[in-house]
Image (cartoon, rainbow, N blue to C red):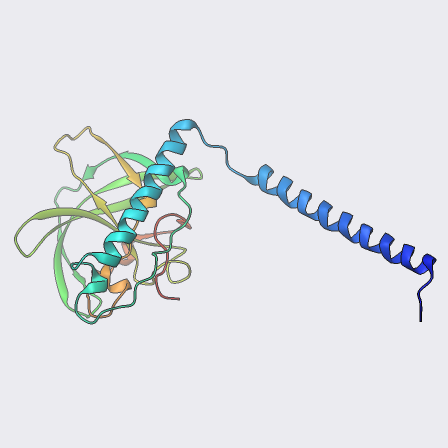
Length: 222
């Protein structure tokens, strides 16, 4: 049956109202994003671009380098590593406060093996008006090379981030007054996060930071 002009006009009117509703919804969403978006300085924008470039380079290394954990032992299928957005709010500064004495403690790997490490010192960060103490550990490679690390868990652990914890490399400077930059955007997963063939140090209860560190690398496996 042929529809009347009046019916057609009503349909057109409803379609127009639907179009306006969708346009208004889109406009409100965009306004919300702009209002809630973060405004960065030119210096912060340079920092973010540099961090994103480093992540892209790491993806390339992980995928293609023969010494990558994805190309050793039993091969694990690679996909791009997952990250939180780079956020300058998770970059902190602190001196290194050395323990005296420096205790040698036993920690464990994910396969249960004991490991000796030195609880060398700690740093202090202030997040949302709360101060947090974070340990810095001294270890040594099989060849005897000394290195320093931060091992951590936080309120994202086992949810958005790897259940064992994450690491941050720490480059010690021989100056007791040196102010270090602690960048949680560089927090990364140990190799055992990708493959059970690897064992990695398990952070202690003392290494738990009671905040959501929504920065750095996320879980690799869902």
